[in-house]
Image (cartoon, rainbow, N blue to C red; front, side, top):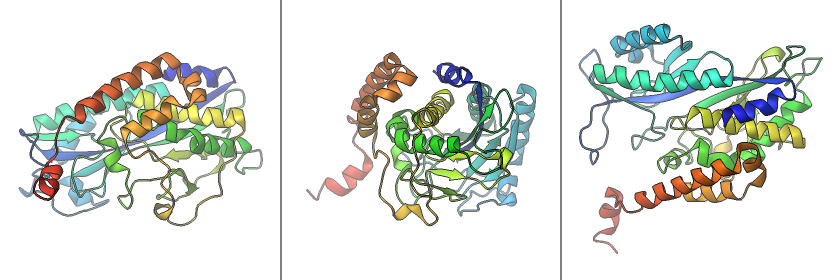
Length: 332
């Protein structure tokens, strides 16, 4: 599917550039899925109990693991960049260098496997679940994206004078118009939608803004040649090939249809209307109703994917959660 979307760009003489940022949690090993996850034990012998965003000391707690990870990534030529501590207890984030979408998807796919295997060797779990721990922020895969014109090498998102181009605004318009219908691919599991709730550091709508981390689509401050759009609605649990394909497809449709974005959002978008699906069944209904997206991605794939996800949700509905037993057993 990603190759199919990239061909649409290539036919117009364009090359998309992708830069993913992947969040994940380190946890103590958990042999019983009925028990909540706990933070792992670091070098100090103590579990992490507080939120230490951007803390170097908090990252250093797990230096033996991360030293192995960087060694493994060097051997595999995965081109990872900066590792930081995110907001959650035991939550980390890794940035990848910008590059070709297919190569970046390969890198993310291999990194996930490499990290999980390395964590096991250090008596920990590494998880890319969108929401693995109650009371902690979810994990996203933020995808920075821009488009290069092959003939000139220029960034299609900036005009000759360095200002945002029409293509830039149309790309955002496409993300706003089509990304809600693509969420079944960008948030592919029932757990994915536990992340997309208000006031949990995840976007709940498709607003856009400059250096605004409360919106679905953020425009980082940059030079004209580096102008890009960051899609913040995708979960870390998404398949990178599908996630890159759908975000590029949405932007492509926006440019082809010359869709105009909404007005820029300067304040906190968490208080604005909820514009993303709030569960997998709703996301699948929206995906099935979007003919233009299916045409770009391939109707046969969409049909098979939706059928599998509907069966997956049916299986989930046969499980009774602790919340239901706690709040309903003796009170209804």
